[in-house]
Length: 299
Image 1 (spheres, rainbow, N blue to C red):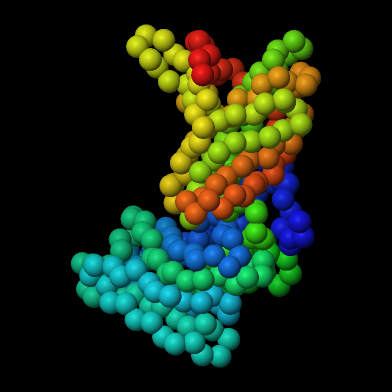
Image 2: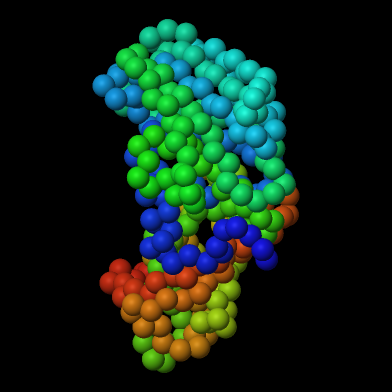
């Protein structure tokens, strides 16, 4: 499949991809969205401007290619939508009606705009002006080359518009527990966040004959493991696959998985409309001391 985005990422690179926006005050959830889809852009405000106590206004300048449909009102704030002009597809502005309804610097909030994404994969940059009780911050810097925001002091909010079939899911901290010769199975763990929501329904890997979504759960006094079928990933909520809970079970291992090696892993997803997508990873193999609790493996 031709796409401007690499489909396979080493887990360390996944972590680095978000590093450029770690200090940005206004961002979109990582993970991207499918080309041509209806998208709910939830701009996250982490804290107030420098030396300010509260955020009093947020203005989102919509990029060309984003077809605006509506915006979510906020209690105690006025909402104003400006029509497209020049290089902008329009503006959406929220303004606090009083100091009491302004967003305190110690609190986080989402400002939501809805619209349809272009049919062509690529990157959309949303420039956001944050006004505060003291001063303002214009999150509008766009990389001169490439798509990394690393090194930018005031980066615009980035949205990866993904090719059809590429899962709009952010994957963090993925790892597979190392195995020894003769061991038939092991677990894969990670943190998943789907900006628009979806379900993890399965996985494949050349390292194992079978890869299934499993769950460890107490039944009476016994910890049992069973196939879970699918895991719901609610929109913009992190779901962790971890030892002792939901995880990916890799069975019928083709060979021992050595500590420090990497394993190709393809995650399979299906959204509420039945659209299927995948995410390809290269996952590091680590020696884990905190193994999932033992117990009967029951399907």
